[in-house]
Length: 254
Ligand code: ADE
View 1 (cartoon, rainbow, N blue to C red):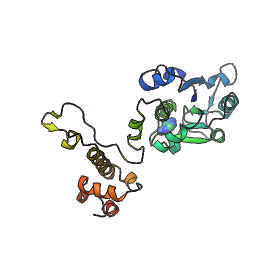
View 2: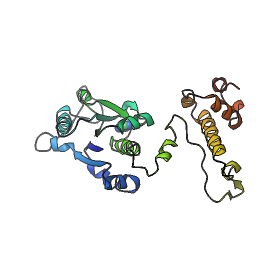
View 3: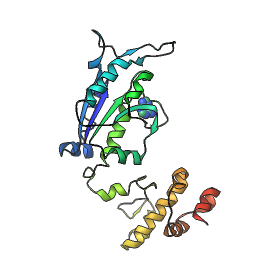
View 4: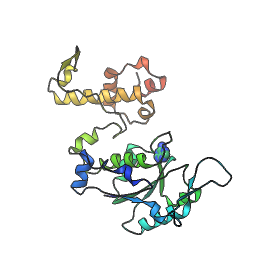
């Protein structure tokens, strides 16, 4: 996958994509990331890209001319690609969205700065994405989050495909609890089912715990999970329904 990022501060991306899993994915050619400075399309001797808002107000806005020229230039320079504007007003990033974006051959990510985009820039985006309900100083960190979340959905980037499928949110549920050696640490012991080597029991325990955890920590996701008859049975043993809402108790019918 080719990922192109438009930013006014390309320096912040130095090295972040070069380590660990993303670094390996780059070196093996699974992802190829290029950062472009859209100041190159700025106006006049000072390469201006921003101006004060009409009607007054704090800060500066990105002007439509330079940024839209940069987007058009990139669109025309390679295979078809969704252009993604990064803004707190966008649709919240989800695991499903990361999975969907990973199917594209090329992505173009556009990082805002200052107080935001002139409204006339917005039609140049195919989608606007937010990484959460808070305001960052620009879209660069949001772009890094998207690159990371999307890259690990590309087959081959994460060594073990099975581990991606067990991630929190992959199928809508949170991940189950995980333990490593030692089996007992500071009087706290690993659940015995994980030590017995009975594979089917381990799978069942993990599913039950994942569902129970989702019900307790993210009832909003739990409500949308399709539950099988087996899931309901597993939840009975894994879950303490007294502590949860009527709605969730009704869903697992206890
Ligand atoms: N730019 C500023 N804040 C942002 C956010 N929360 N998500 C995406 N882009 C942003």
